[in-house]
Image (cartoon, rainbow, N blue to C red; front, side, top):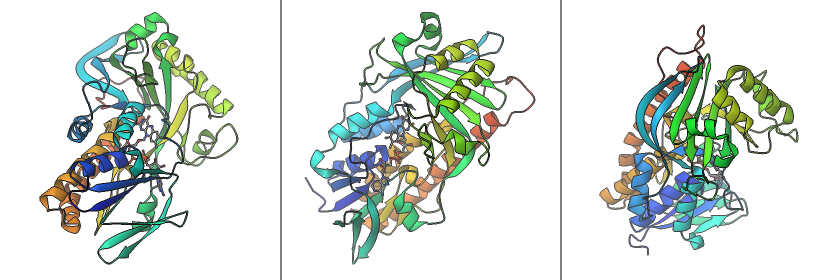
Length: 389
Ligand SMILES: Cc1cc2nc3c(=O)[nH]c(=O)nc-3n(C[C@H](O)[C@H](O)[C@H](O)COP(=O)(O)OP(=O)(O)OC[C@H]3O[C@@H](n4cnc5c(N)ncnc54)[C@H](O)[C@@H]3O)c2cc1C
């Protein structure tokens, strides 16, 4: 149903693109999503802290949202001497897979176009034409760039802005519940568990299973370990995969170079506490992503909007990348309704708060990251740093 008579084109069919597409459809727009990948997007499999904006986006779109994740009731901060600092804190932990699967199933196939790579756009009177690598062109009243960290839309609109390496990577891993010994599993189950030590920290929480299962025994332990590497002398080898290919920002599961993986495993045995050593050892296919910083000074450009990771990449300690995409999309739908679907006024009204949100998360993530990754002279923190993730 195209109640507003307007058409939006969304570039990028991952979470931010699906949030935008779904919420604009909920206010009566016709929306087509164009995704570069020719296949259904396949998660690197990681965990996501479920935040209220994501739940609200699901609610507004009419997607069932009662069972979106696994509860954690408290935080454990493991100490080198074997003791545990406990902190009550309820959170719901979910997976990229579960969110993507639900959003994608809700969005009509006929309007989700795979294997479409945006290369350029052009203004045509009151409308915008999106131009694709296969030579096709699509016209719309609103063009949305939700094309992630390497956004083509951002490169076209703000060519001097691109992500910067934050000075450390996140090694990550997933372990099926039955693959961890019962004693270690008991420490990690339904808890957010941290070990903070000099210049580093590792964390764990339980997330839904590969097929979105929330059933105990079918879920997965999800861990992230932040390790500092010099950008020039160390990072290039970490980001070179097992076939010798240098990757931009991440190496997916099963593709890490043998020597890098072995070094990471042996480092884990030297510096981590026993439960985390066992968790890393039980991980079959660890993966790694460089931690990035990105912020832009502008998100609205007449009839074009940049959102999600295309505009701001807050560090993962904020646990807010996914929810920021949801918040951007909710606010965009609200602004369009408030401005009677007049696109330039709606984008103007939308932009101020979204820039503020992006800047806030960007700054918060940097502060949390710098604190945890540059603590010299102590083997453990006196007080836990309360990371969001
Ligand atoms: C396959 C995949 C798995 C992920 N898994 C996790 C996870 O497990 N945990 C986690 O915290 N985060 C994960 N992320 C990142 C997470 O989705 C983002 O950090 C956040 O949700 C913001 O998403 P986004 O949609 O803005 O950007 P992204 O998720 O990066 O999506 C951008 C999309 O745009 C597409 N695209 C890029 N350029 C073009 C172009 N020129 N034309 C058309 N399409 C284009 C990309 O193929 C991609 O699908 C994953 C991302 C992807 C793509």
